[in-house]
Length: 554
Image 1: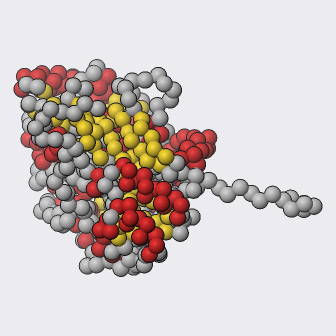
Image 2: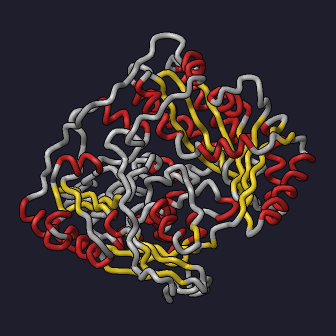
Image 3: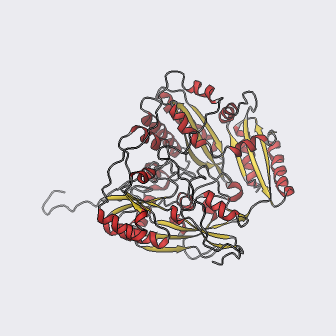
């Protein structure tokens, strides 16, 4: 790929990024807004069951032998292959509520037997070869933000497991300004990518809630969808090419913007979650940093009228950068959290608009305004949209603070067609509410649309309830009830959080047994010894039945 003529040479390395703590989302506890106390009092009418954090984890002992560690250190360097507990503690898995509860309740913590950090594709490939020959499971680890059990340190049938830390691969490897393509090491985080691109006048425009910590390789491996998806597209829309290391060899996929050369093999790895191999380099489409941004918010009389307006605007091809619609409950809760107890009735919608000029951004805003007004929307000015943008990465950290005082706060997401959207929303809301109420709590179930398509939209649910004496069973039951409701109502089990291990049991309902068999066949081809992220995406293939003994009645 041609590189930029900018004065700074490539590859370029970004500033190091802080990794999240072992037992929480952010290094510093989130401050609970004063108005949140009223909400807490609503969902915790009786005695709360706080789950306090621990000062330091006790880890399962490493079973990786000295000779194994020496072999891996010979590839990546002595300082980058370690069984040190402080390093292992930062690679215990993801950041779902069940993950965080496990770190507060269990002792010891299941940990990888070692953490190995190669610096480039060649190093990753060499580590996979060594682990394949030594029966060591490999769990690729970017930012560690999975909320579906996608990076748990699971050995499977192997005798040990390592976390393959990709943070040292962070770099801008190549930049083609003519084609507006940039190649990054897979461990580059969202902020690092924006830092490297912004210095040259470009942006990737991918801002999921995990943006501060998650990596580009993780975005691709989970089919991430950022908050600006209406303007920039999902991450899989942005991927031009992938470089992959597998136990069977290397793959370089994607050489043209479109091709008819058989099925698109990139699709095998977009969403593959490290089960087939490791994404080591990702080439993505980039854009110049927009010169102007405009903001607008509206309230609709109800969720149905708001969804109808979103559908019309999307099917007419209007493309704000960000487009979000909260239901009545989420609108009320967010208003209370912001101290606006009497404002914003109905359903709040927020949008942002980017352009090469202010006039261009405002023209897009005015076009959307006209569609929304026809559906009964009232303009609320810019402030709610600007307020949302300021706090858009803060919500996950509130989970930790709420858990400290005995409150469960968790999310799940799905998507369906416009025609099926009301039925799916009703089914999932009812399933979550009934399951949590049966556990003796008074839950609040909220929902919003944050990703839209001509044929349909996503639904993102947030649940707040009092923690019970058995909080893991409480949330596991609610998540199972919601997941079953999603399948029965013909939604997807995940719109952008991936399958991991948590959603694996529900995948067959969506893709059928033959679909699962196809995924297993791909894994058997690329990872015949089953070392890659065991149990993520697909369960190991069942062992073949032993032939009946001669003369038996079998």
